[in-house]
Length: 215
Ligand code: HEC
Ligand code: HEC
Image 1 (spheres, helix red, strand yellow):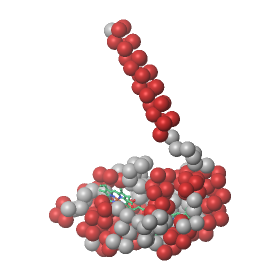
Image 2 (spheres, rainbow, N blue to C red):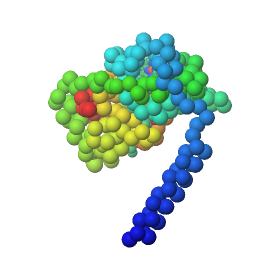
Image 3 (cartoon, rainbow, N blue to C red):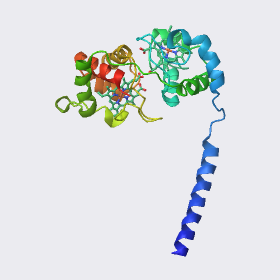
């Protein structure tokens, strides 16, 4: 018994040392500064996304409480990178804004918005939302649509670094972006393009309505 627990604690310290060394090696040279992010946000983003990221304009996504890794990726996708002739995520409005941001700005803005508390939108049409809930939870086998909750989670909170938060978002934005994946106008993610291509416009409206009210 005693020998076992000793070995156990040695093993744990070995693991801890390993994790520590590893995190030092892989940590980024720049650590995000949410305070600096707040200043840039106030100047460049607040008019459309609100100063705390709780956009009140339904075509503009709510950024508050979104995972920083997701925000960061999207801001890079909106930029036209060296050697490429177009952005990964083409959007006329965000292209111009993203092109002015440095990598550090992006780190800081992502940290800032991810730390703000979301004031969720709401479902306005309960019939639509109920139909959306069925697809969200069960998918649609006959059309090869997986359940959304299998990746985005039962409450639509996503998983940092993997799947974005999608609950509490404006229905108008969610519907627009799902249609953009469907038509290929938003072409930065193959999984979501394949899934959206199988959704009807009606199902997209239902899902968007459900997600607006999900918390
Ligand atoms: C003129 C209005 C406007 C301004 C200013 C603006 N945005 Fe946006 N933003 C939009 C719109 C509209 C979209 C949705 C684009 C789409 O449908 O692909 C968007 C999308 C985004 C997204 C993607 C969100 C998601 O859920 O995928 C991020 C991140 C974002 N904006 C961050 C910012 C930041 C950071 C700033 C300031 C540096 C900013 N935006 C300034 C209008 C704006
Ligand atoms: C296999 C995993 C997976 C499944 C299943 C899935 N998603 Fe996604 N979803 C993702 C990933 C990954 C992203 C981020 C893609 C990107 O960077 O554009 C995403 C992005 C989204 C976005 C964009 C969020 C934003 O802020 O712009 C919406 C909306 C969305 N998913 C809705 C759904 C719905 C509705 C379903 C079910 C019909 C679904 N997803 C099923 C993985 C998944």
